[in-house]
Image (tube, rainbow, N blue to C red):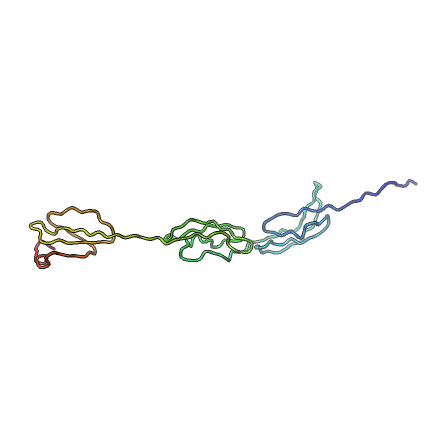
Length: 198
């Protein structure tokens, strides 16, 4: 009878590589070798059902973890959200979730730069909120005297408004002023009795 001679080979199980995905946590699979099993769960900031995967050999000779798909949905952002009338409600990161980005803009009655924010795994909106300053409207007032009659001039009317008026030329016969205004005449009695004033 023939007897086999030699040193028996030392075979070591090969390890599977750990997949890298932002929404899953496969850290428990580190170092798992052929035939070994491990639990794959959702990463921080995501929610879903964990699954068990097995280290297997593929037909091409490579090693891979195989198992049911792990579905992980991002949690909504809850903290450091922009709040206040100074922010545009349509651009205030409403509905943004972990791993997503959004833009924050000032409301139409405010002025300031746009800011890009992102939601971290701790559900906190990260970034610097824009400094929105209220829009200030400056009003000026200009008084203009207009002769009421030129044959002979008996009185003048003085008008004022909340917007700047351009210089107006003297009107030889009459002037018609509409809207709200204040009226000041040199001779009230003559102004009231003037038949040309209507």
